[in-house]
Amino acid sequence: MDFFLARQLRKRSAAPDRIPADGKLPARALIEPFDVLYEGEVPRYNLPTDLERIYGQLGFADRILYSNFVTSLDGVATLASEPSAGSVISGRNQADRFLMGLLRACADAVLLGAGTLRATPGHHWTPEHIFPDMAAGFSELRMKLGRKPHPRLMLVTASGHIEMSHPAVQGGATIVTSEQGATELQGRLPASCDVIEVGKSGAVDMTRALSELRSRGYEVLLTEGGPHLTGDLIKHGLLDEAFITISPVVAGRDHEVRLGMVAGAELLPARRLWSGLLSARRHGDFLFLRYGLRRS
Image (cartoon, rainbow, N blue to C red; front, side, top):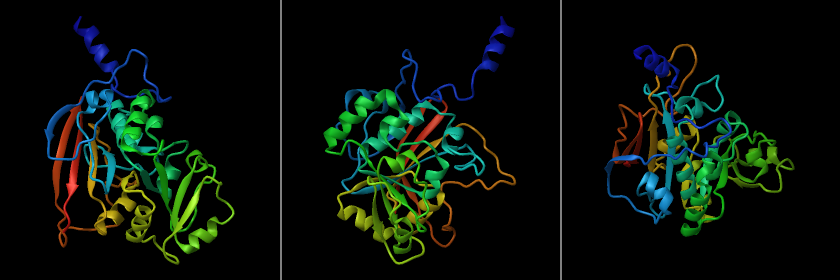
């Protein structure tokens, strides 16, 4: 009997709650509620019953920019040689994917860089794409919040070099770029896309970019951009909150460049950007943290 149990344990995946590659859960599967370890004073939306049963309370300020990352136990968020690094690090954990869908469902728009687009072929940055089993609940939430059916995809690129064939671009996106980048894109974008020009050339001024997005009615913004975009947002004091999923896997570092949540911005020791814990949840061996970033 002991031998049989040991063999069964060895066969079990290190990420037992992962979602199959097609993104759909078996009909018998039902995600268990998150364990709420700590909940601070945060705004609360009137979530649909199914969503609240799983996650608990969630809400945002009327104007906010929040990020979402999954990292390994040792702080790795990217795998240079591996596309869709987040799925690898999380093991396609269903609780992590549910939260990704929920955070997208709350947002007017999802902001990311061209590098993230290239690293995630075939993806759509919509709630139902990442967690299709809760599509109805996500749709109900967006209707309650007065959101459009899908969050608008916002792509940041200084050069204008993006994958035109990517299904997320074909489905419709707003390209945030420089005048030089807009020239590069001229005549190449699908009709479903539009362009916001910020500056003549060089890196996109994210302060001006966010101001322009908000002038167009995009107030609640989620960024799923990579470490460099996140670093730029933090460096300029633009990121308000950070959701961080800690996966119980050790990624390691050696020859390959493996970044954490922030790159391109060195803060300590000269600048101390402390954050405040807003909530902490547990699902299996995964931790789900929400921090508010304090302005320094």
